[in-house]
Length: 139
Length: 500
Image 1: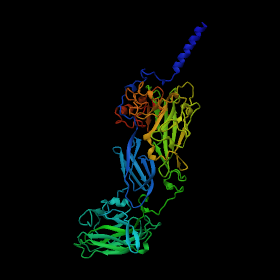
Image 2: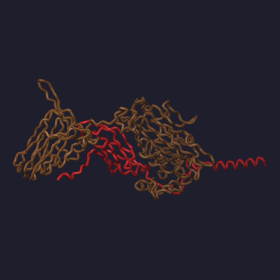
Image 3: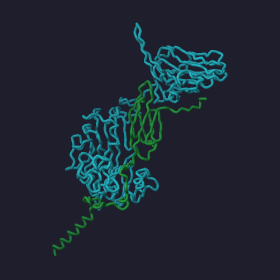
């Protein structure tokens, strides 16, 4: 009787231990996956990258000048969040590639007093230092 | 052959010796006056034109409006700031043949005056006047004009200021092949002020204080973050190679990476700010980051990791994990080192609705590549070498070093148990983009969301919390690419927890 009771409690403890096991215990190879309804029906393309970022190429076209000018070049998202800063010579071309959040659609360049904002188009942005001047003075 | 805005370095040899002279020139061949403005030239009522009526040389010349004003500020060109040298200013000019009473060109200089009212301009001084011969009508002859630079302005910052003036009629002027002895002395990135205007650089690293993120530290200059704003959220399922419950809360880690660079663009240190927010698993998982492609010999030291005694990992003297091919650090070998389990009947930490919830703390891991300006023995690492592209975070499942779980498409470290690839629900084949995707549905075991987002409560699958997620997946990313944002209709707050 005593042994029977001991087996009974052992069984209860065993069941409790089993119940306490987390949902994420591994299955042996070949077992059915534990996937909730909904996710089990989700099928992604084999080439889908599951990325919430996109690769964006940023080109900066240098300005031909007869002097060496180098200073901080900053790139920001349209919302003003800095994602690149480095010293850069104004005369040099620059090509960089960044992974930026999918929802970012503009990039801002700051180079000293020069500031420009451009839309991301086809995952590319091209900047130069040319200033668009008001031509209303010209007949 | 016309040249554009170049300094001509000419050497003239003679029996008595040699000398060299610099020139600044403008011949309008840029074809667009915006380019000249970008290079700190300026002009008023003057265009860059290919009109044959005022063309002097090449394909373009500078062309004035009709010259019917005797003011020197009506129609004009100014050079950038220059340091003038001895010699002759020269240009070619013509009229278009239309009628007019008189037409003249005034050659002036503008001294630099730091207290001047406009861009440092002092009062202009005329030192030459060219008169087009009368009658102005039918006057289309090209004239070559030469004028000596006044001795008084040699060696100091000045602009040359050319004004076109006239009375009556409609005649315009063309000007070309302007050559001025001297050197360019303007800074287009500083409002076209003279280069002489310097801002303070307290640490002397070549980066001026206002552009230096570390103005008093000569070994550091710039912060370079990814993500650009705040933290990103990494979420893992930990049963790989078997599928899990897809709540992606077995480990939830927010991260922000800062690559601190010096003035040369070399990385001084990578600072990984980590916030481990949830561990919805019974496993004692670890978390590490590899920077793929970077040789471990380039690292001097790793600081800030949380490793327990009797760890399953081995470490080199510099703190990196041993026997890896690329720079790899283990931020913690057991999630409970940074997010202790609270007990009280919960399975994991911070995933049970209603709590209790463990406090989330910032863990900062610093990987040093340079100390006091000196790079590691493997040489410097440049900013372009470490970025999101080779950021390779991973979970080490349940104290089994070989059980690495990475983002889909990422490669494992050298310490992965390769025998697990392609087993159970995994379809990875080494070296291929298929890495860490499931056989059924190509599902991942980890996700990296570029925003800091809430994670799923225990018992809810991911699609219950993020309503547009499945549309994003099924459309291969073409729809709802911003599914993670907090936009009306995108989230179901009942399924989400946002402990952070």
